[in-house]
Each structure stands twice: as C-alpha cells, then as structure tokens.
Figure (tube, rainbow, N blue to C red):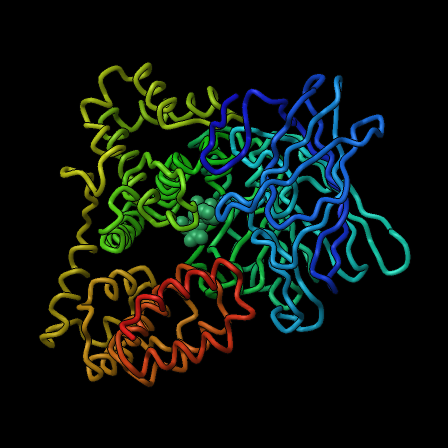
Length: 592
Ligand code: BES
Ligand code: ZN
C-alpha cells in the first residue's frame, strides 16, 4: 500500500481507474451538478479503493452487474477533503457512483446572470487545478493516475456546454433541456477536467482553432486572438506535432480567477486579455505551450509544479522570440524578473516554498502558488539550454516529449533523463542549488537588452524630473510602459502620481497589466483620483494576479484600507472562492 501524492488518497497498490463515464445535469436553481460517475478499471479489480471527494454527497455505489458496493466517507480533512473508501467485489470492471456536488464546490463557480456580460442567463465554469476535481466528481485526484473520459452534460436548453474534450454531438433531453456529449480519447490528469456552461457562441479562427465567448464579447475575442494559428504552427516547429486534434479557447466571465488555464483542447481565458490591441496574447502562447509541457508531459504532483510552469514560461518566450523578435522576448524576461523578485520577497519567511522541488505534505497547493516555479523554473531551463547549446537542447526537448508523452513525471525522473542525455550537465550548472535551495542562485541567467536598460534608467531618474518627455512616452508600446511602471520607486507622492497619469493616461488603459500596475502604485500612494478605478477592477475582475496586489496596495493608507473593506463587503459574495481567499489573505496583513 502506498500513497504517492501528498494531496490525494490515491494509492498505487489499489485498482486504478483508466477512464470515466460522466452523466451529469447542471441544476442552476440549486447550483449543483447531479448524476453519476462511472469509473472503469483497466483490469478486473477487487478490494479497497480510496477516492478523493470534497463536498460531494454520494447516495449510492453499484458495481457493473448492479450489485451494491459498500462505501464509507472518512472525516473531512481541511486540504484533502474526505476519503471515500469503496470495497469492490471480485472481478469488478467498473463502479458507478450516484452523487451531487455542493453549491460551494471549490472547483465550480455558479454565476448569476448579472455576473455575465449578457446579463440574461446564468453561467457555470470549473477550475480543477490544483486539487479541485474532487469537488466535481469522486476520483483518484492525482496527476499520476491519468484517465480518458466520456461525458454527457444536460443543461437548460438555452445554454451551451463545452468541455476540455472533443464534442460528440448534442440532443434534446426533454422539455427545456439539452444534452451535450463529449469524448476525451487522450489520457489526462484529473486536474485537466474542464466544463463550462453558458450563453456561448463560437467563431472559427482556423481549421483547428475556434474561440468561444458570450455573444457580447465574441467579436472582440475573435479579433484579439486572430494570431493563434500562427502560434500553433510555431509551437509545433519547436516542440513537435500538436497531439490534441483541436485547439479551442473559451473566454470566461471576468470572475475567472486565473489569466488562463490550459484545459486540453479548450484553453480557458480571462476576458481581461481583451485589451483591444493584442498586447496580452502571450497568455495564449503560454496556455498553448502547456499542450506539450504540462498536458502531454505532466507534473506528477504539485511538488513538481515547476516542471509544468517553468518549462511553459520558457516555451512561451521561445514562441514570443520566434514571432516578435529578441527584444520583445527580453522585455518579457525583464517583466518576469521583477515579478520574481517581488515573489521571493513575499515568501521571505517561507523560503522552502521558493525551491523548485517542494515538499508540500500538509500544505495547500493554492497557498504554495506563486510566480517562483514559473520564473525561477524558466531560468533553470534557460541555464540548461545555455549549457547544452540551443540546437542540442531543442532536440532534447523533443525527445523528452516523445519519451514521456501522456505520462506524469517527477523532478527526479526529469533529472535522470537530463543526465542520460547530457552527462555532467546538471552538476555543471549546480542543479541542486536550483532545485533544492531557496531563492535564485548566483549566476542565474540574466536577460539584457538595450531597451530594457534604457527603460530601467528612465524609471530610476524619473523622480528627479529627468525622465522621458511626454511625446516619447505617448509612443511607448504596452510592454515598455509595463517595464517602466514596474521599476518606478514604490513610494510615489500624490503629485508624482498625477504627473505620471497625465503623461501616460493610465486610468483609461484597456491593458489590465498596465492598468493594475498603475492602480497599485496609485493606491499605495493614497492617490484618491485612482480609487474609483480600483473599485471598478475589484468589483468586476476575479483574476487573483490583480486582486491580491491591489488589496495589498490599498492596505498602505488608512483611506485605502477603508475603501478595500467597503469593496470587499459588497463584492466578495460574488467572488470565486479562490479570489475571496486571496483578498482575505491580503487584508489579514493590514495593520488594523
Ligand atoms: N496552469 C496555470 C494556472 C493554474 C496554476 C491554475 C495552478 C491553478 C493552479 C496556467 O497555465 C497559468 O500559468 N496561468 C497564468 C498565465 C501566465 C503565466 C501567462 C495566469 O493565470 O496568470
Ligand atoms: Zn501555466
């Protein structure tokens, strides 16, 4: 008997489900999914089987022939949820569990019509990474146990259901209901299960790529992401053939807590990417790159998260360099450098979480989350790339994909594979300093570009009044503005805020990276003309990358804290559970 994932009751000595059959109905009145999940085993199974559940009510379990299977729900563990132990009779090929989700399921958000763009119909979306699939279905919720699946999702007839899977038709399901079918033939980790239901319209961007959004945003979405096919082609040249058939995207309502989520065949995206100038499409490059680094080859557990995210940031910037050139890529690395430094600072009293290879027994992966595995991880990959040589490393990446495709790997497996291909390379770059020590090793790769230096210099001298002139600033591209804002002193006066806003018209920006970087500076300065903007963002947008720092910045002054508390009181009932937690964590650090 062995549990192999600190965040799951999955036991690799027990029978393993190789596929799921889901039949669920979305009840928007009660905010529950209700129906059955069938777990199909690869071989005759028998004996104890431990599943993960969180907030699920299980009403019955039967084996293939219809015999009742005894089951027992363990006590609620704060991070893991409740273990569901079945005892399978001999020669069981599948078990079917009848169950329903909780209205407050951590992996689902049920939105009222007012929380959508169209304001007419409700919306539902899932977000299963890291360990929330167990709040959607009873399963072996570990990336080590991959599954294929089929699903039939019945929804109110005026709504459309999409999944991170291949569509397999839809049909009437009685008056007022419609059933949507899906099949996912490639084996995926449970955290990649994805479902959304809403008033949705699709628009084709290429023969294998379609964007879905609410009717009110579909035009903007199709324009913003028109370049996606070119990205897929670039990514294939770098990492090998795209193995998932279609690459579709779904633009969610603004409460979606992440920028993007790499659900297979259907990337989920925040609508804050719709900047109107295609300046935020690097998030699409990132989620697309996960089709290789993350979805084809997945981290075995959250302790190896850097394998997903570090590799993907590296891949995203390779795509960016190929499409937009060396300088654009350098600015992206520069922006990431600053975010990394801030995260290392934020985690200075939890240095163990700034290792790449983490130990997360008893730690909620949502609490361990930061940009460290992203930006430190990507720098480690670059260190390997530079030591091996770019062409050699590109070949290595393709063979890594080929060797581990549709598998989930640990840091140790990765290192063994590197060692086989490049004997001595890990020692040469002092891999243990990257993987097992906190912080960023001395001699980590730096990314220099003339423009990055110039913008940093301008930001440092801006206070003395020797900054760039307004005409020059008006011509800056979005990534240039962001680099500049990131490097300004953190303690601007209100006069300086006014001068900055006048030069860059920051309050009216459609690019949310720029808008929130500005709002954070202004909020920390207690610059009240920006308070309304902060309120608008915190009332509408759930992306944690923006919500946490904004609440943090408002905490710096008494009027800011009063505003934050007022916004939280009125807006938090409609926040995603993750967003609410992030906001609460930021406000818990307020001085009073
Ligand atoms: N897989 C992540 C999102 C995620 C991570 C969800 C951990 C839940 C737990 C996704 O690929 C991601 O990294 N999104 C970023 C995009 C950015 C790095 C370009 C985000 O949401 O900000
Ligand atoms: Zn990612």
